[in-house]
Length: 290
Ligand code: MN
Image (cartoon, rainbow, N blue to C red; front, side, top):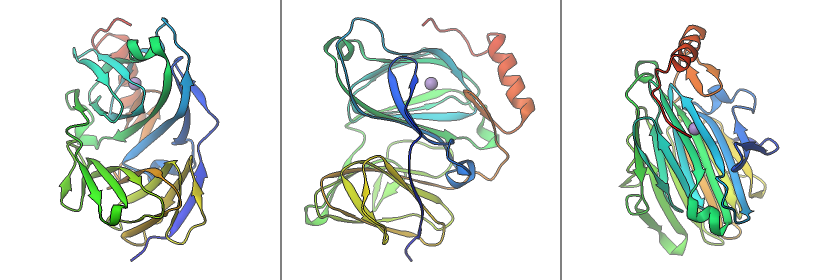
């Protein structure tokens, strides 16, 4: 049965994250999204934007996270990162970094040096995926998902392709290991293509149109930058593209637990937030230079 479209909306006016990411926030700024998009907690979208060449570092300096995972998808432009667990690397276009902050990590996120020097289009998304209470303090780790690991499934009738980041599509399994069921699909549709997606009725589900335009489940034409939240009243989503389109499909089992958020911490209680602040101030997240 088809899911009803619950709401179509654009992100909040853009703001700067550090000096390198000019993002529009879709949630949690939208009302009720803590529950409606769980297990996803936050979505910041940097639409394609040209950055002039510079020798200055652009991005966001060392900062903490606890209680969730950050998923960074690079569509265009390259992002370098380092963390207090000693990991570091570069997220190239088409790649994803799935970082588990868990019990606590410090990291920084910058435009990769060569990209900064030549300048160019940065197009990326960061999503925060909440962790269930019993996994909030799991050991920090990160999964670099390279272009090779994220295999592509070509859709029939030259409709386009699907890259499975996590969860599965048909019989293709995505590489990301997750703590709760999370489906994340990078979808590219050719013009006049038709697509069928499924998500169990009790999973929250949404589509973000990054490029192009689509109609879905009886909706009006939905264009780039618009986000579609579906009701939990069915398991099927159909999309038809009018032009070449890039979509991000998010679906997952909601985490039905209390949630308290303060800046870079997403916990279950005010006490746990206070503890996170105290631990951070006492250097328990480790050390990382900027
Ligand atoms: Mn961060």
